[in-house]
Length: 344
Picture 1 (cartoon, one colour):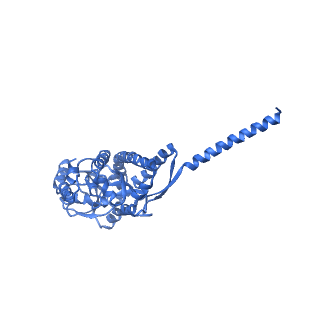
Picture 2 (tube, rainbow, N blue to C red):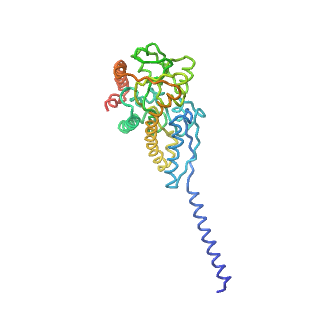
Picture 3 (tube, rainbow, N blue to C red):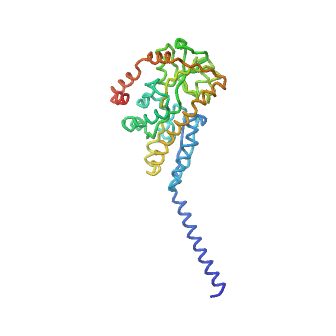
């Protein structure tokens, strides 16, 4: 066999092998289905849970899907009012304006009332991880917790605890319980009831409104957690923090539009669900890490911290109306397991 014949034979075999490799690569790429999804929240990316959704949850989903190579998500991220405002995520997901999002459940005590159990039990714990795991355990044990979201056309994946504990931030010093009397205090829904026994007037609002409300004199104080107070520069308008350790609560839920969820492949649904638990635990860890740093940052911004005495804290707790019993009894009348969940 001549040298040219050998070369031509080798060239044909090489081209054939390259064609097979090329076809195989093209088939692998073509087999990877691209799914377009829109993630929404009315809060800005600087909000911790949104930042971690962007930096942790989305990459975690992408990584887990990439390991199997069957699906890829093309993300459309719409934060800070691009599609919905902070109070509009539940309705936005219900109507299909977004596919997945962060619902601030505290804004909807009438629609997802069982999510409020931690709000109804203040002065209990300042451990975000404990609360987050407990709420998900309850959701597994009591189907009514997930059904509440399904009634609004969305599937519940998990809850988030984005703070270590609520504290009181005020324009003037609050050093004893009597200093709270007569103050107008911003809060978000259920936590306004903590003020009923101390003579303060609760004024509903959200994180994005507290700064201006304090600055313009609409309110005298606000119930916020330290990390959020630092992020939103609350020290500029309310430089005094009463460290009362009012308690840790779950205020967020990750949900998916039910119609979109049903269209997703089983593999994708499984990844979204498992990554959501990892995201939940990650957010709890971030909340705990930021707790002590936030106190330092608040004072660095010009804030002053006053620690409430155990006696005053106990007096405040005992002065709150029996909101947990009232909440549970009201739910029982509606056929919901209020007292069962409270007991658990």
